[in-house]
Image 1 (cartoon, helix red, strand yellow):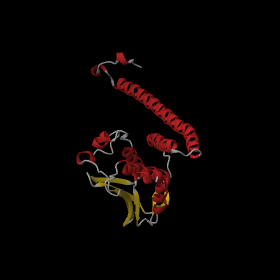
Image 2 (tube, rainbow, N blue to C red; image 1 turned 60 degrees about the horizontal axis):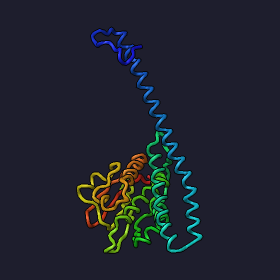
Image 3 (cartoon, rainbow, N blue to C red; image 1 turned 90 degrees about the vertical axis):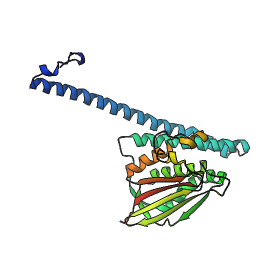
Image 4 (cartoon, one colour; image 1 turned 120 degrees about the horizontal axis):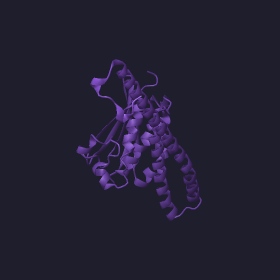
Amino acid sequence: EWEPGELPEAEDLLEEDFARLYESLSDAYRKLETDARISHTEAADYYTMWVHQIKTPIAVQELLIENSRNPLTSSLEEETMKIEAYVEQMLYYAKSSSLEGDYIIQAVGLKTLVMDVIRKNKKMMVGAGVMPRLEQLDYEVLADPKWMEFILSQIVTNSVKYCDKSRKPYVSFEGKEEGRMVVLTVADNGIGIPTQDVSRVFQKGFTGENGRLFKQSTGMGLYLCRKLCDKMEISMELSSCQGEGTQIAFCFKRADA
């Protein structure tokens, strides 16, 4: 086999030489591909392990806060919730990048799913004065419940983060049957997204104008939501008008279709 610096000129190669060169390059490519796959898997495994390990001190901290209620621990509780949300985001980022499918598509009640998300984010919503609105959610759809709970929680978090407190803020969940599909629209009356940023909100790391105003934005939430939805074959479309609010529509397959 030829060394990288010893490759002959093309005009000097015979047919058997081309075959040997092709095989040599193919072997090198396969090795690079295998090394990259191993490195990727090891990184994903480390992220997952790190997330599960850090959940223990977070749980201990939550217990200490619960057993010692005062103004200081209330502030600590809010910060702990943010840490937990970022840790969960890291976990799903690791899962979304994995070559293995770590999800199970099954029938799930839309109303049950939404109620679980509201319960999970109740403290955050109450603290910001954001009211939930539910309408026509009596549908069974196909999705992974844990993944969808994470996705909807990200949407609720954004609605709270970018709410407009000068009016009564809300986040609404409305289902609508469309043939063999069910569309869930999650909408708020928050500050909305500037027109020039709407087409880029699903890009990895993009924060836009709102991100510059709210320094805690990571630009990962909507990127992860779209990526997980793509894996589950659930379409996710966003529309927004600055100063009026944001709508996100999820199109599910009906469980009974």
